[in-house]
Length: 477
Image (cartoon, rainbow, N blue to C red; front, side, top):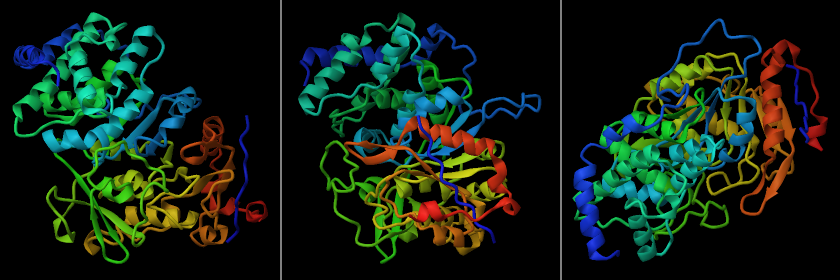
């Protein structure tokens, strides 16, 4: 078979009196925070992010492209602003199994799914066109100090409405946001046996958790958060699993080791409460490479405790109609693959004849040390095929059914093994301008990445096998 590999470089302890006041207010206000929603200004065109809308056959041919992006809550955030300039018709699919940082403390005390990645993406998509929008974004994006006493004191100032972060936030938004922060705190007070640690806590996570518990619905919490932060009407932030329960991610290594918990897989903290550092040099190497990731019961510790949650139906609906599917850069096994191992995801992706693009990392992390580019493709294929799980639930699709193009940051660490990619019938590889980040190393230049991605979406030739030509010399140098 002919081979195409084009190289494109896109240029260009507060006082006791405070406790008493807060408890009294929580008892009064937290009983019905929903009443504040009537005062919240309606956002033009903003709809419930969990509701899929049917494709409109009358949409003009020059309408912005629609994408579905599988990612975590960190790496892809860096290009969201640039992507918004091209299209807001994007479904952001995120895992709800993160058990590190501020999210870990919320899940430990209050249970439920992890919302940190979803909150992070909602903030990146939020409106910045007015001073009030910026004030709301600053408030919900704020993190408390690392010192436990300082963190607790500042939290009380915020939830009491006395902190300067409220400056610039109008009364309707102020009452709405504060109502759910008070409700969140009331839920903590009800669990007196558990001492909640506010260290490095995210105000957005606290607001999100309060809304989820009040509505008993992750979907409703996303709707509220999206409305308050005014994300674009056509942008969807979707949990890959729509649940109100805690989810635990596990992984099986090739040496048979089972690791429980996303944080323990990617950046173990050894029980310390500290800011997560995802630098590949900041933690010890895994004893063996990762074979697969899977979901397990919250108290499980081995393969006998594997569970099989259902994929969010809205994700499946979006997969069936978008113009392009993107596997974003970031933590491969703990950010991307948890969304791929669910039944229905692989089946739907394999059925589409559209660009299916892998954004290759610029550097290795603990999860992928030593993997070449083809190894990333294999991990995605095995996850979507559920290769190492229940044989009765596995698929036999080929790598090319899931990935048909790679975007590679120029000068990245990941070996680009063209021959192995070709053996998997993946022939379209595009190099993209990069920048060097002081913390993470080589990353995509956001503008160049979005330029290259939109070019791929508009140029459908690489989907047609009869148009492939051999041109790999420039990538082998």
